[in-house]
Amino acid sequence: MIPPNFERNDVIRECWEQHLTIEETAARTHIPKSSVGYFYKKLDRYAREGKPLPARPASRKEQVLQRLDDLELKSEFLKKVEQLEKKGNFAAARELILLQKEKEQSGLTGERIDSERKRLRSALTKIEMEDSA
Image (cartoon, rainbow, N blue to C red):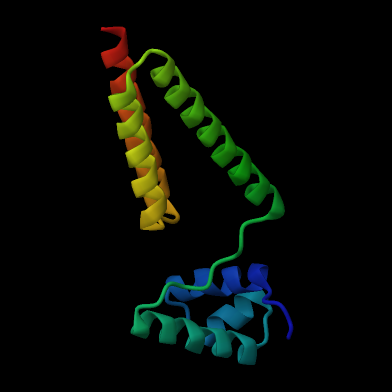
């Protein structure tokens, strides 16, 4: 199977979103009309069925950066739990662990992970403020 040409598909998608005709897109991009027509039909079908448009997978560098970010968050999380336990604040440590467990069980992806990450960070800030008081 031939892998998708994401650069070409992105150009065609932009033209499709601008409501250009197949002929206009083919003339503007120098992509054969048959390829443009095929992809336009595909985009129309996705739109009609309410499916998300095919997206380019994250680059290897983006994947590595995301994993590093995840590891940094886990490390930060574990350090905070250990600090709370050393202070004897087991209730706050338990609450933090439960929030993390809830996040993992919900199977969040994409944008929801970012909002969940913000929620967890605000919970950490709240706990830190309670500790300092």
